[in-house]
Length: 291
Image 1 (tube, one colour):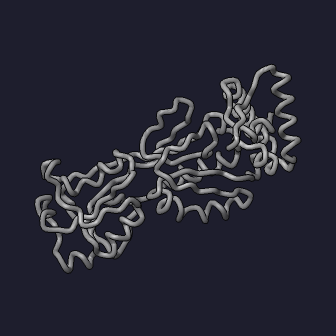
Image 2 (cartoon, rainbow, N blue to C red):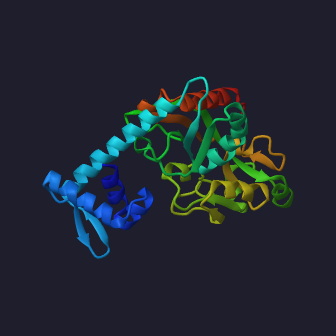
Image 3 (tube, helix red, strand yellow):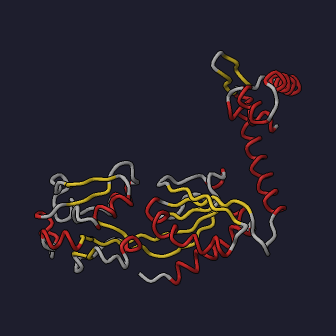
């Protein structure tokens, strides 16, 4: 089954054989023997590789499920709750992962030297049930019913400008003043609920007549850097700008948006000790973090 899984995943006898340390002819013979035993074809063979048949798709899904269960069992057998060990794949958005989480990981690594962290920064919601990640920080409630979720903290968004920018162009006191200022916006392939938070271009204006953004970036870290170096006025979360001496919060009297952050992980992973200690560490850091 493992050999079948690797062949189906690679779509090629040679690549699967190289991964398993088996020659191509042996892989081909074993797949043919499996097809004869099951009495159904598993692959369509053509010049550019292999394509799963309908029967092959059914078997591949079973092989995936088996592989995930075996991996979960292996992790539980090789861990002890006293000394968590192994790799933990952590998914987070570029902003919260690259700023809030990254600066707290050193302390965790010092506390648990046997745990290796793979931090995956992406705005895509990875499939935790398929082990694309073990645990994730998300900015909205997960839709998957089999995920445990725990609220971390509320993220407050504010409008900011660099002190150097305010010295040059003044400080906007009202929303209408933004008409006379340079606007920085988040764009690109961000989720719509994130882009909606960066609405300085349309605030107080008709949606079809927005203020022109002088700078649009598709990365929240670049957006933060643009604000603090004086490119213009932009929206940013409090965790990105707290205690930053180079920026000033503007439009303080205007009600600003918020988002709740959530820590999520699969039900079957709740007994994995390295996930338990990482979860407890983050919850403690979230509770002690002052905005």
